[in-house]
Image 1 (cartoon, rainbow, N blue to C red):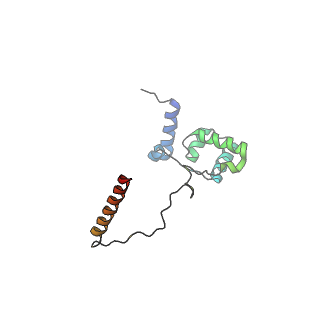
Image 2 (cartoon, rainbow, N blue to C red):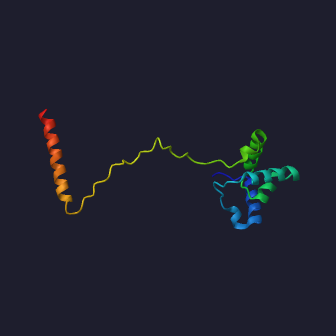
Length: 133
């Protein structure tokens, strides 16, 4: 059985003490605005906040998120802090199958059996012609 590190347990206890049971719920696919990211980075820098305290103050689940924001901001500036689109890009119109513009046949319930019969006969004739070739 895999053991949980003491650091993770301390982190969970701190989140529980600060936010209660809600602090222990998973925060999956959360997006943060560029303004919020910049505010967090400035607070960490200005107040010399340890990352664990920053986690608790801003309710961010993992230190690695701060480290990524800091690296992106240092290398690319504010542009890289903008939220990115996630997931697979939408298919272009070129790749989509278009429905034909042909009007669909409007067949009433009375004419449907006759229509089916004529289609079957047409299919039989086509098959016979292919056999005779």
